[in-house]
Amino acid sequence: MHTQVQGKWDSSNKTTNLALFLEHRYISITLAASQRRGRYPLYAKAALCQGCYKALRLTESLEKKGSELLDAIPKPFLSLHLRFEPDMVAYSQCEYQSLSAASRKAISSAQWDRKPWTGEMAHIWRSRGKCPLTPNKTSFILKALVIPTNTTIYLAAGDGLMEVDGLTSVYTNVYTKSSLLSGQDFTSMHGNTKVALDYYVSVNSDSYVATYFGNKDKMVSAMRTFKGLFKTLFSSRRAFAELISQGYVRVNLSEALWKVHRDDFILGRGSALPDCFCNPELCEPPIEKKCRGDEPSQTPAHVVSKDNDEGDDLEMSWFYIGMASGYFVGTLGFFSVLRFKKSWRYSGGRRYHPSPITLFGGNDDMSWQGEISWTFEPMGWRDGRNDLGAVLSPWAASFG
Image (cartoon, rainbow, N blue to C red):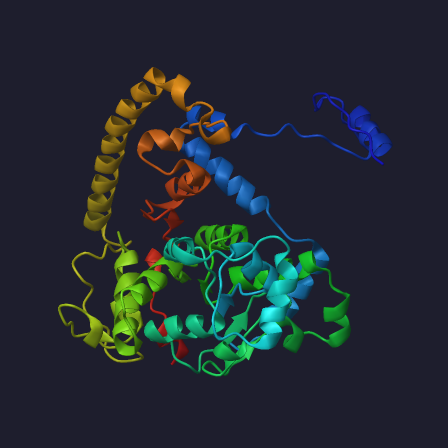
């Protein structure tokens, strides 16, 4: 048991500080108040963000094991974070048809008192995108995005993943931790160690696709952005559910899913999907583009090149216009908050803490991601999800 020592670090007397550390074996660092960062200028926020992300490292032994795992995967490869474990499905309170008897039994054991929603509530819950995608639906979305079925996929998933045959029957080059590590290494690992290895591989993968936007996905996408790896995509559970409820099936559903994700990822760099997924017939209006080693097509007018000074000026102009608009809207919102603060302070049973990003028209629940997007480049928001996949670079061509 370690004793917590409060007090300032005295840099002028390192001998005393070292003696205290050796005696108590514990250093308490005052946590940064997240709500006070708004008073700092943008360059200070950027320095804080980069300092924190550069300091985020795995232990030496874990990083070594992660490197061994990364080297064992054939290149290039796509890391897929698929969430369809019994506890995940039970927690979602969603009901699935056509599951195997073993899967239904596993879900029932993990449900306890969290019974699935029924009737109209079940439909509303699913249409909000609250239900995890099955491996079968995931493979359908990947095919809709024209990701080749011979793509090497690393399955970053927890133990007990159900119905995995729905994925491996379509995408046959699927690798997991258990297939790449020795039996002794795998069985001796704790759950957190396995998650850390998945994190390491996903951050360093050629491409990353997630079927759920959880804490791990937020960390992976942010770290990949920090490292300049932009082939990151979050599949839309909400869009899939809405299209199914509207009666879309097979080819029509595939085309609709492609269009949904294409529109989702059009930002300052333009749409990557028509270029990299090699299916120009789906574009409206049709475009003439070539992939996989053919002559590169002309860059669309809406794509801003990093090496184009004029394009950079245009991009920054739009950025400053957006910032000015955000200031105006945020100022109105600020005075509204001051006027009605008594009515919202304890709304919903929890205290609401407005953060600086709220004044810029951002999503308060995702304010920390807003800070990150400021650090690198303006990012887009849609349905509360960070569209880091907006900067997908040619993808399918890399698998040719």
